[in-house]
Image 1 (cartoon, rainbow, N blue to C red):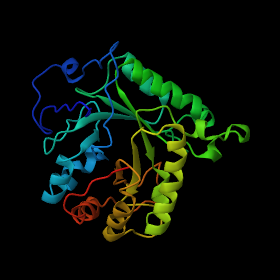
Image 2 (cartoon, rainbow, N blue to C red; image 1 turned 60 degrees about the vertical axis):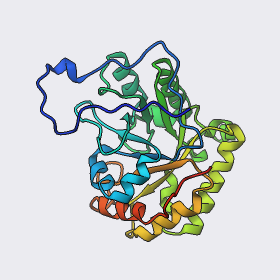
Image 3 (cartoon, one colour; image 1 turned 90 degrees about the horizontal axis):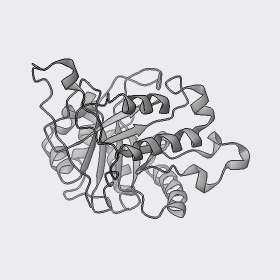
Image 4 (tube, rainbow, N blue to C red; image 1 turned 90 degrees about the vertical axis):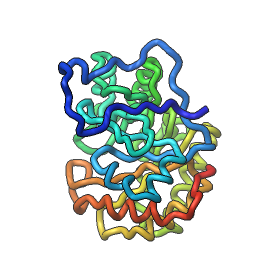
Length: 279
């Protein structure tokens, strides 16, 4: 069953409502919204550069065939270029839980990301207890009827005695592979790293959707659009979609170059007609 799609008012529209009308309580007490099946290619791309990337005609057609998650803040509106699932992004489980409890998610949000990072964005106690924090984030999302998107837990983030496949795979609706971005300049290396992590995840959960990370602006030497295109073509049979990043320099990536949404659009537009993941 495909995920529920919700589209809010066009971004940039003038607001004549009181502030409380900009926030809607997330659904509570019901069954969680189901994640997409393998029949749907999943795309995740944040609001900041979404329209710049998706306004390119081949990319818009590509996204229209898939299931699209767009992380937004409470004061942003989802894109109207293609149907999207509005998504809230959190680096702290405590903030995620509080936002749900206080009904402070943006209008129409149907999924939440818990992105436990090795940076100050995530509280140290959550970094040091990543498995427990991820379990809590998934549980609070599930109780609110929301999908959860969490990263694969790298073994070096777990205590030495707890480095098992069961502990590395988060109990979330969708599992992301963001650290594979570090290998994206080499298609062979990227595919090998993705294949390794997918094998671990599939040993625990044969059916959970998996999305591999790709960045148009990684740390180090610049990446090319051709490299990103090749990475997607090489891994389309392994994963269910892609977590696309167009980062700007900041706490999470102080060595990143300036954002380059045009490069991401070029990479996506170069994919073959009918491109789809089958993992």
